[in-house]
Image 1 (cartoon, rainbow, N blue to C red):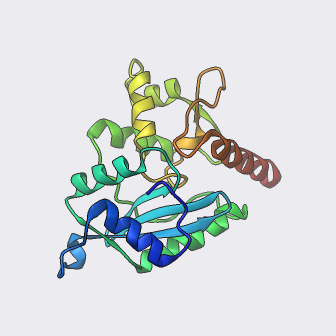
Image 2: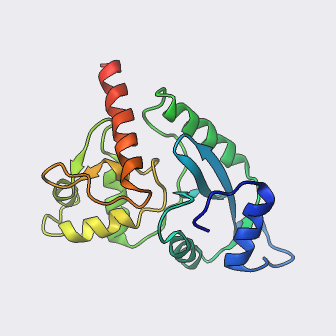
Length: 201
């Protein structure tokens, strides 16, 4: 699925190729609705459950298939290509973010992980707009200062890009290090936020 989907039918076909045909009858509670969303940085894949946004990744992200498989296993739900009311809220807020008019997302999230991962992701959401933090600072923030490497792993396992701002985490020396969506996207996001933060202060 690491591709840009040129049409809805191509997207649906890609989902089917990865996960097979869904059961003929499924209820909403057992479904994660999958669709694409266009952004200035390229197509993203979003997954929504009735309880919240559970996936937002760049379509070209390395190991996207693995991320999707882990999410399905973690939540124990069926993936279905299609629309969901929450997707419109996600799209509206993403548009506002890229236009520089939104600093804080107000989207319900469903991001299950290990206790450690969830602690890291919560810490990521507390990083202010336009600010960068080091992996060591995140480790200290969750009360595990020796877990810097593990923090890096949890950061990389984040499945909700931008909304859970893993792009704001850098090395201690300021180096951008890795980013699943590509370093050029990380650079863009940081530059966007820093420019807007400077403009609005």
